[in-house]
Image (cartoon, rainbow, N blue to C red; front, side):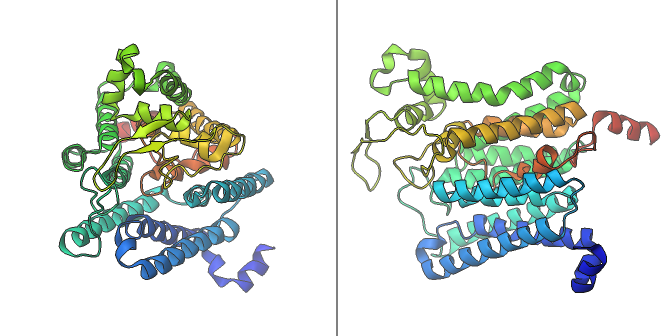
Length: 422
């Protein structure tokens, strides 16, 4: 459609960048409300209202993202259209097959981030997520709208499980750290450290809390050794992390047998350090039968008859179904998206990491390194409220070769020039 004709029919396209920014930020806010508020225990007390709210928020957020991608995004090359369409078509297929709507939403959020001011979008993300988290906790502790879920081994904080609460705290933590790096002041360090301590001590979310501490350590180390994090050694570590964690998950899950844990004492220690994750990987992913232990409100039961989860296209629900629920993104991708989907996601992630390393965006490599470590213990890669780094997808898929990456953190060279100018 010619630009002049499109502007006569749609006057709001006269200021396309600003309109696209507003549409995108509105969609992000709606999806965060969906994940933070209406994915909580309010679904059990107000089922009809929650169902309508979830449908409305999902539909409105999806529609706005589609409008942003189709009408409010400038594509410099025809291949960008082809890549975007292929990504959406595959994401829709994989989401329907694996019952994972967040995968499609994450792809739309990532593609829609093209031509968006990431700093503004991240401020909207951080403000919306923080307000929604506080609201949920207030409703959880002061009203019967978000009751305690008795299935959880620990207090669930209104989300059915304390790790769901920790995932959303992690999203706030990463958005805050990403927005402020490398200009972290003392109050940023204090606030981030307090949030990490709270996550580890109060809800006892080990995966989220340790990822927060790791990111703080990486931030501090980069301040002390900036040249190391610009070196090929660091870039090699960043690029090797994803395949290493995938192999680690597969091998340790296969070798560790909780029924004969004395034969693998080192893996037994590692299993305890990982809060029993290796046992889950062994039984669920490798399909070994086991006796599920008794919990509050439920008797022990035999977890048997599990199918082979390694297929080409996947299709197993890895979050809601207790038979296939698995706390590991690298294994969940194979189960839910199949070998094809796991290879595609790994390829896009590695391409993103390679481009960030090649162009010297150190801040984003620190964030992605810590996030990949977190994903070893949780299956939250595509949950918007847990992973704001989805906004980096245009860096991998929609940026022409040689063009500056639409990343947020300044490159060290540019940062040095700014400091010298001041």
